[in-house]
Image (cartoon, rainbow, N blue to C red; front, side):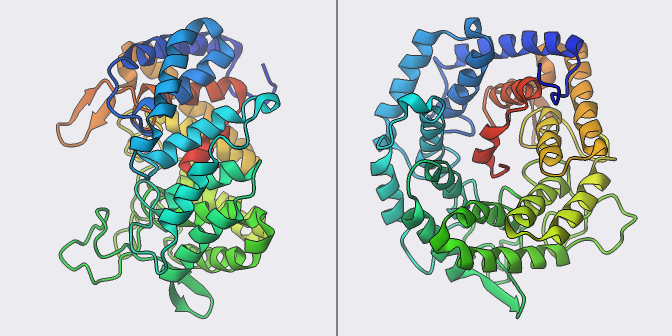
Amino acid sequence: MPTHAIASLEQEAQIRAIIKKLASEVSQDLHTVQGNGLLSGLAGHLLFLFNAYRIDESSVDEVLFSEKLEQLQEQLDQQSFELSSGLAGQAWVLEYLNQADLEDYEPDLLTEVDQIFHDALNHQPWPGEIESVLGLAGYAPYAARRNKHSDQSALYGVIIKNFASVALQVNENELTWSQPENSVYRFEKDDPHKPEYNLGLAHGVPGIIASLIPAMQIDTLKDTTAKLLTQSCDWLIAQQNPHKHEECSFGSCVDQEHKSRLGWCYGDLTIALTLARAGQVLDRPSYVDRALEIALKAAKRDAASGFINDAGLCHGFVGLVSIFQLLNKQMPHPELEKAAKYWLEFSLNQYNEKGLKAFYSYNGETKEHNQNHGFLMGNAGVGIGLISVLTDDLDWAECLLMA
């Protein structure tokens, strides 16, 4: 086991057993899963099962996996385009799998998809959603993954142009993005003309910032991207809660109370992670310092103050293990490693009490926990998070704008 992995030997044995059980559950769901999407469908299932196979070949039926992977590829032309359920998420998974063995890498596997996205997105000013789940930011993980082995300056160039086309210049040194008037993610639907600045990684400005970061690797886009990043990070930092003694540094939306959950979708942790990543690519140590301050405050919160009701990657306790691991990679600190270990122990204690029911997804409307096999909210995401505890490999987090 790597010396930097956070599990003890005793925990490792239990985690391997849990992963095998989760792989069995998710494999069974391959027969009935609805949709081919990443966040809740077939692509997310395959992403987890591929990583489960890497640590225990006996946990995955290779024939069934290959059959479903072929189905995913054959049905690409039937998909909508967005990250959550559509082509952007599915194609990211295919490129992730394609790059897993570079000796057999097929550079032209998704060339047609590159062009499809370029043509579909090439509209300025950008008329649609800007966030990550359904909108523009959700195409960045695919472009970033493809750019590791093919030139994506054209596709990423369109993404950057689109964000620049709808950015709001707040003052000489700061810019941001308001939720579009017709966005399904607006909190204020009664007054769609009122600017609304969402502060969640999933649906707001932090997600846009995170989607811009990989474009710093493309020479022709570096200057434009650096300006967008710097001015939006400065704006984001200005939204921080001025009352340092309070436990939350950011709210869910500007002009709302400074209160948010611990999670991927909203809250201080992924804002801190985004600022740290931006600070490193921009060579702005002040961003990293601010990110560490925010992360260390969040590391003191528990399940009650963090509004933790389930296990999933979106806003659950296993998801927190992964986020604290990522934070500790960006900004190594004993308290961040301690937090990752705390939430791991919390996760295993929940499992010891409830078995696999500990990983059921909480429904905020019915106030009930239900079995969920999806990547964002259910077993597939819990499984991949636990695998990363053993391997310290969180490369998959790129698809959620965290790496």
